[in-house]
Image 1: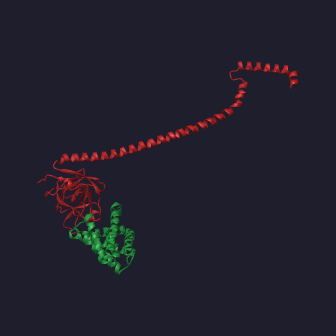
Image 2 (image 1 turned 120 degrees about the horizontal axis):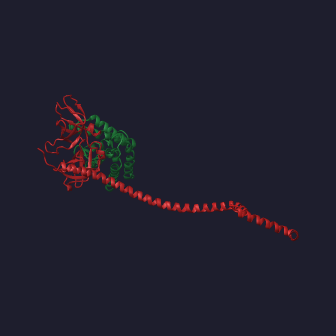
Length: 279
Length: 170
């Protein structure tokens, strides 16, 4: 090596100087990086990409973990908020339903100022297959008494109180076989007796008997309480005529009435504790 | 022959078993409606113990069940269950004494008889009130029986356990 440099050193130096000058000239003239820089960076580029990829992977993992943790916390928070909002929506729906009932009751109060109401919740629907009854959460301490009429918020008749305790009462619905009341067809003013029939009770229907021979009822005719006799208030909607049939003897007709009330959907009702008797 | 204390305990256990049936009826069965009918275990509660205990004690227990039902359930006539359930108890006891021994088959038979008697009594009350509905009453009683008959089996297990505990020394 020593001999080589001694013999050829001047040429090596010259070649290096030429190369250096050429590189300098090329660097000066070229718009891109110098060839050596270029070569060095070309060689380094895959390694740089590799370690950048690794660093990015670690960074992604770190971000993913942080994001996941944040998202879990956010998710839990959102779930809590959704639960709260759902509870508020449920409460709002209940309030809206109560509001609707009370507004309708208010209208009814305006129409029937003679009624003294007691609102009650249904604690139990029918308990046997042989009667159609409801149990309410109001009793003698609320001045409820036997034979008080029970209506829904629209003024449709639900039934009649048949049994009263201290804080409860049993209501026989209008389709029960033990319920009967004077009725009047709103359109024709025909009078009859609306009473429960066991054959119809399962279908939530009742009969309108003792109709005049010349009555001309139509399907959909509204039937309401007549108030005759003073036992029940007048003008409470019982239901509508579903069909008119001739009884077994063939001598008279009776109507099958579909109650306006859906007994299964009832949750709150109103007991009429007092009313003015219309003569 | 049981001592007085044992007899009292036996009937208290029968009452507790009946109470369990009443609670299940009120909390669960009351809310089930199939074919437009609610399952009703009350007639079976009056009948099944009578198959194990014989005519007089069985009828007396059925009277108690009837009184409880009249206090708790609306009925179309006063004391309806108090009057009908002794017949149910008597009939169930006679079935176990003369037709088949007390057990699952006897419980099923006596439960069927109980529903027939109760349904007939309901139909008679309707007829007496000029609201005869024999067909509808038979339909309701039949559906009630079909729906309630499966419950007679666990009830038999319950009342038989009481009977065996009370008569283990016999």
